Image (cartoon, rainbow, N blue to C red; front, side, top):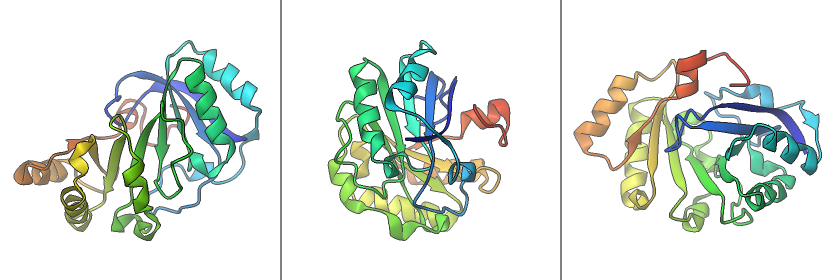
Length: 210
């Protein structure tokens, strides 16, 4: 598989934010979100075997690992990697755009499914059938660029009954004022969790390998 980087850091998003985590960032993505902060994953990367990736992950001695990208599920080998990491007794998170069928993923892993709002430029790529495949331990994320994105996300959350899962709303870094998003959520009593990208607060928005 093609791997952009593997590193040990603090989990910056999801309900697991703040926990030490090993990140396996796979190369390639089938989407081009307007606000993407990991465009460097679109090309390049190093070819690594499954065994090499797993050995590198285990070398950090951390029981939480996230498989991310780019879009990790765009590489067929990712599904075997996820299964193997679960077999090794690790807690496995998968950060996915939700544009690819998630049904082959090991049910022991935890999906963090990013529903694309209109402001991303990729709203047409949402694979809505994936919502029916989510398990109770999975999570749903919306990245919010403006008020229109927020209202769209609010409608999706309420009409599709997404509060059955942890729902996370995150402002686009450097573009959406976090205070506004928090105030909108409070005013609407929205059944969701506000989050920012904790790793960017710690190391800055341009840092890689963190």
